[in-house]
Image (tube, rainbow, N blue to C red; front, side, top):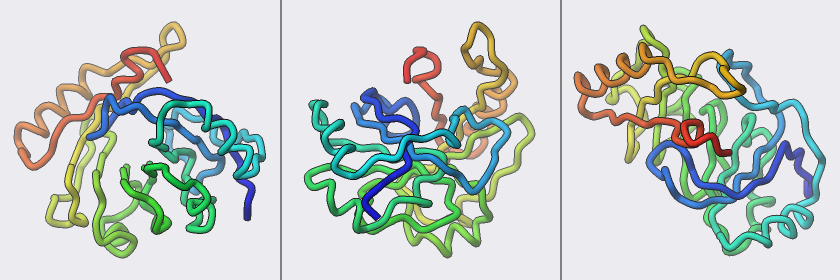
Length: 197
C-alpha cells in the first residue's frame, strides 16, 4: 500500500511528553479503533495521499523529525511505508492496541489497554503517558513494559472561546499522584496552553 488516509500535515513543536519543545513534522492519520470521550482530533476525516505526495509536502520543512499521530497510526503504517521516508527520525503516538512497525525510532504510548496487552505488544516503550482525570486509577510501574519515561498528563476539559481549559482538579490530582509515586513525572500539553497546533 503506497497511499495513506491523512487528516493533516503540519510543522510545529512537540507539545507533550519527554520530547516537549522538539520541532517536528506531524503527520496525522485517519481512523481509530477506539472512541475516547476526550479525544480532540477529527480522525474520521481524511485526504488520501500517496507516499510521494507526503514526501513532497514535508520536504518543504527544515526538519527531519516526523511524529506519526492520529487517530491510531498503527492501523495504516507499515514497515514498507516507513522504509520510503529515508533520513527521517520517526516517532509514533499510539494507544497501545497494536505493535508498531520496525522503522519507528521513538514510541510514545498513551495506553488504552491492559498492562498485559501492552506487555504482549511491546518489550520496551520510550514513554508511557497516561491522560488523567481526577479519580482515575493507574497500574504500578512494575506491571507495565520497561520505559525510559512514565508520565501522567492532566486532561483538558470543556471548551471556552474555542480553547480547551485545564481543570484545576485534574492538575492537583496529577501533582499529588507524582509526589506520592516518584517514578512518574508530570507532562502538561504545552501546545494547548500556547494555543498552537
